[in-house]
Amino acid sequence: MKRFLSIHTLLILCITGLCIAGLCIAGPAAQPASAAALQAEAVVEQTTVYQGEPFMLRIRVSGSDQVEPPDSGILENMDGFSVTYQGGSGNNSTSITIVNGKMTRNIKRGYVFSYELIPQKTGTLTIPPIEIRADAQSVKTRSVRIHVRAPGETDDVKLRVFLSKNHCYTGEPVTLTARLYLRKDVRTAVFTLPALNRTDWFYVIDPKAAQKQGKKYYRIPVNNEEVIALQGQETLDGTLYSTVSFSKILIPGKPGAFTLDQATVACEVFTGYRENQRRNPFGDEFFSDFFNTRQGVYQKVVAPSPAVDLTVRELPVQGRPDNFAGHIGQYGISATASPLEVSVGDPITLTITLSGPSYLEHVNLPPLENQKNLARQFKIPEERATGEIQNHKKIFTQTIRALSADVTHIPAIQLPYFDTENSTYKTAETRPIPLTVKETRVVTAMDAEGRSLSAAQGRTVETWDRGIAYNYEDASVLEDQRTGLQLIQTPAWTGAIAAPPVLYLMVLAVSAVIRRKKADPGALMARKAFRRLSKTLGAIKKTEPAADETDRILKALCQYLGARLGLSSLAIVYSDAAPALAEKGASSELLHDLEKIFTACEAGRYAGARDRSASGEPVAELSEKTLKTAAKIEKLCK
Image 1 (cartoon, rainbow, N blue to C red):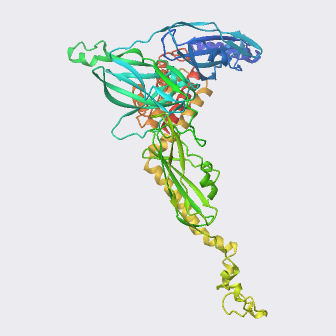
Image 2 (cartoon, rainbow, N blue to C red):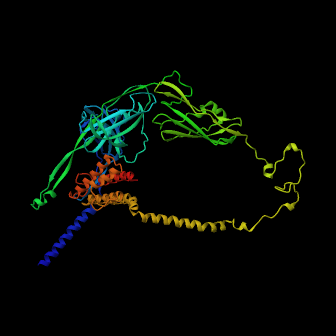
Image 3 (cartoon, rainbow, N blue to C red):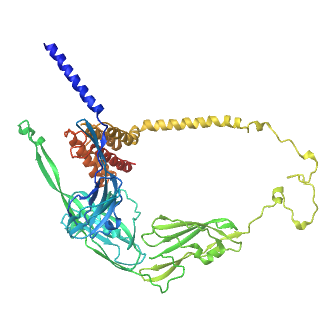
């Protein structure tokens, strides 16, 4: 009876399976769901921010991935905000549903535009509706209100902006220095200097300052870019602070009275520790310290700097030299030449040294063709020399050629400049350089013969038994010059002679590559790490959804970070990778993205979902974000 029941049960299961299979086979193929209507929404990270604090605005579009970019004019002229486009990316997903044997493929297409917004004033600001067009459809986002608070200075965090001078002339470089004063540790610091974005006022340049040994430098974010900042100590209002400072060069392009808007710094300041006490399973006070952990507590602070005024005056027209080339400041000029004894047309290396202002990166050599005395006696190439800064001087090297033997010296080279201390035009000049120029000697057939004959001698042609026998007429002067060396000049002999050294060089190169790989296997693994990660993530995206996909993504990411950063990939967490990346100059945004990936992957271990992480984010999108973040780390580590 038991055997009969088991066979009967088996038959029922087989018939049921065949029915289900028949329904699947006989049923229609998967039909795509109808196209969704175009929708768009404006999403912000937070609706309450401080003035000068950057935040992200994302325009999420659903219903199409072929979307036209929003009107840049509306975004750039948004009242109260400075807007910077951060890029866009597709946001597509696919799912399949089966209802009563009918299979339906649901395809969701979308796109995301990202912008960084910086509030320029306090109060309630509005992000207006933004129109989105795609596939002959049009839709607008809803307006978003942002409440902007005034930043506040604390005793622990202060920001100051200094100018090297508050009065200058058009074209005169001014050094802007921003300095952050700290009495407590900070976790992040993001600077916003509106003055650096005023390209209609200034030409902004990064000073090329050599980093000194024994000093500590940081890469910090300033206006969507990174700058090198110096750590130090300084007293402000009678209190000693740790400082982080950096500089920019401002070159005013027009006269006027300018007020540089206040700069801000948004940072997370350490305020203390929070005790996290976990349940002690042993019930013994001996283990109480082990289960009590401390977690650092950070408070967000946005500190402003006072506004700074700058008055820019126009250069006077009266007294301006005709050959004035825009040199502003106090200048000196000197020159050397080599060689000093030449023939007409021989190259002469002319070295010109400019000195004076503290900032010389933008200074060019005055046009030598405008030096009338020099241009009259020497040929000057059209190419302009590029200078090199050495010991606070800028050195230019130019080649000139004497035009005649009458040249006795290189004339003085003049450098007109505007002296900002005395508000007058002055001219610096080099000393004349003595020069000996000879006539160019013409080589004739007499030189080839071996002796010189003057035409004035009037002598008849005689037989010369040395040199070229040009006056012999019989064929006896023709000799057979062929030797056995001609065989060596054939291609076969040439190849036979060249083959051994070529093969030796090839073996030597291969051996060097092998030795280098064996000497540093970690470097080889680091170079291949990104390729392996990309291959693993690509395989995850192609396979059917599984509950352990986030775990596989995390494992692949840890293996990549371990190879790239020289860490053990067995138990890498975000707190291990973050300090190593920060030392390499990773931005706060990159570290934030990496932390979000770690959080999503680690939470996904317990979520049990097959196609989504614990945060609700599609696993395919999480995989794509992981690859993009790794690509940024790859650029950072090269």
